[in-house]
Length: 424
Image 1: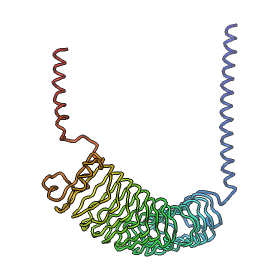
Image 2 (image 1 turned 180 degrees about the vertical axis):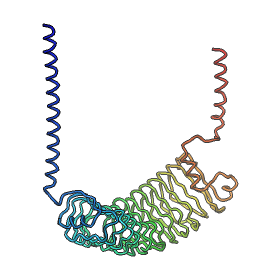
Image 3 (image 1 turned 120 degrees about the horizontal axis):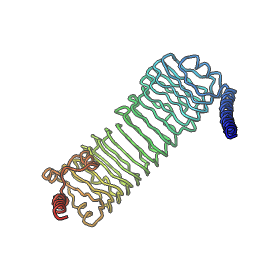
């Protein structure tokens, strides 16, 4: 009887496991059927797909659709010209990358791209036509050393981000007609000599103009406000109505002799002016406050800054200015909330005004340094600005310390250990 009961229990357990296996099999089958149905549903719209194209036949398939939906990537050595006359809208993005054989891109019917148009590393590409484009989230044309012809719709209504880098373009073909720019980076376009923004009033994120033609002349005289602005390697710069920069304002490696921003009142974060070898006149007559740091160095011809900062009252970060200046006057300066460094190689420079501010507690940082050429050379404590920055950024222990008390304390440690060992 007991043997019979055991056999019945074994049969029952086996039935349970068999039922579980059936359930799992059923679940897997159902899941597979659902996946197949989803794929089948997506294929009902022949113009909705994401694909990577490496052959000319793939381009012909795109031309069958007035509206494309998906992420399209074109690459490889087998494709010559790209012409999509039938495509009017792309709900997605088009990326053309790493294709040395492509010689031209024509998208003359395309009006709207919800994502980005990116063309990168196409060494033989010489022309791009997007004359009907009205809206695009992002344009990126990078490493196109043969690109000399760019036909762009100057009446474009919306574009959030533009990057134009390493091309052979001679002009910007409508890219400078905007009243407002969100993000634009124009760099290393060695043939561009003129960058004129006749309508630009606002930069909501960032505008970077750097290392285009060495003699590039930049004008943005209607610009009033910018979030961040960086100007590098230009021969001439003009922004006569610029009033405020909420973030960082930077000028470096330029060859102009004068930098004049006489309506600028406020810089929200940092103001950086460095490595402008020919700069000998600086005028910021209405600048009253800098929300972060003020940093200037390697402006070798800038010897007189008597009238450069007449209204500057407060620097909320650090102030670091080094150079060959004989006079640097800040008659309205009331407070510097960070570290202070002002050193000149000229023996005529005087620190009296700034020493007085330090004595009154108006310079709040832990580190204060003001020196003229003679004192600087004798003390040996003043290094180049870059070396000083490196020292300030070191996080590891230093090999020597001027704090004798701290060094002495370390000598008592082995003595205390010995006493503990002997008497405990």
